Length: 356
Figure 1: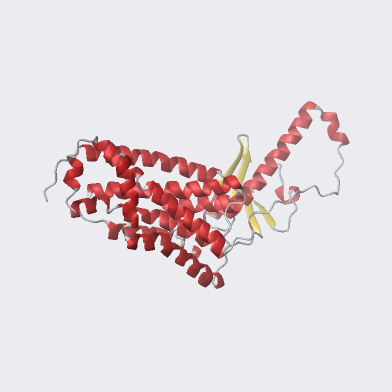
Figure 2: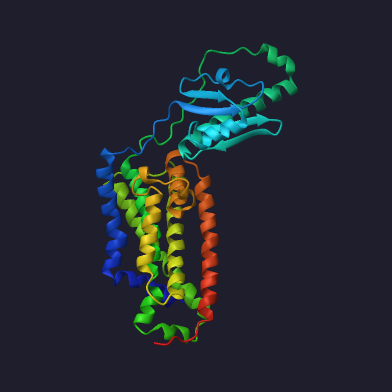
């Protein structure tokens, strides 16, 4: 099994085309898109004039939160959800006997702001109820101070187009790993070595697992080169914390491994090369997910596309330092990887000698 893993890793270095496509081309794309698109669009979004719809009795958020940049609009639930779906408001929540229910829109940025407002209200309400319950007399002695105790904590507002495309092109590289690995068994058939694998005395499941594991070292090398070069040459910024950077690196690696193993399974099932169909499918999904240009993001279709889900998780890390989406995506991807190895190993174990 060790020899199979080493052999799979060496295959990439025997193919100059693969080295150019997966190590050099993404860096060129980051440079070109980062320079060309920066004059057309900006990576940052200005947060202002937020419209939040709400349904609540005995609560006037307009007077509770006096902020010129946030407009609170009281309305019925049906109207609030309709306006949210139409994009007329940035968020909607209702407060009733069951508590606070938050309805999110399509923008991760505005969702985070509205969620912060809702959490702030719940915290304030919790503190108030606790004081009333434990010491109601103390409420009469509370005096509001004019002093501002707010601690402002900004997001990664200096995000540039190089930051954006360093992540976007990394996602592109991860998905196109399926195209490279889809030629694994195709090449075995081409060089008449497929039957040698099938008839090998070694456990077939171990052979297939070794081939899959053999894709991992090159995936790691890809992202070490890509992310390091982007940070040094283009001054690309990643997550604000060390843990965030580790999670981003892990997110991209696991995504790359997932699509590499998917490509291996595809090459096992289909006798002919599927590199071209995979290229087209990945390219369209990247385009609709806004990886080449944010303006091309197609909603709501993009919400179901892997590159968009990975992109959102990556930018939640980079902009807000939110680890949750990345961890969820990683766990789902690991589960899919295990499933693909089991299914692929079962298919390969039942393989009979192929006619040449």
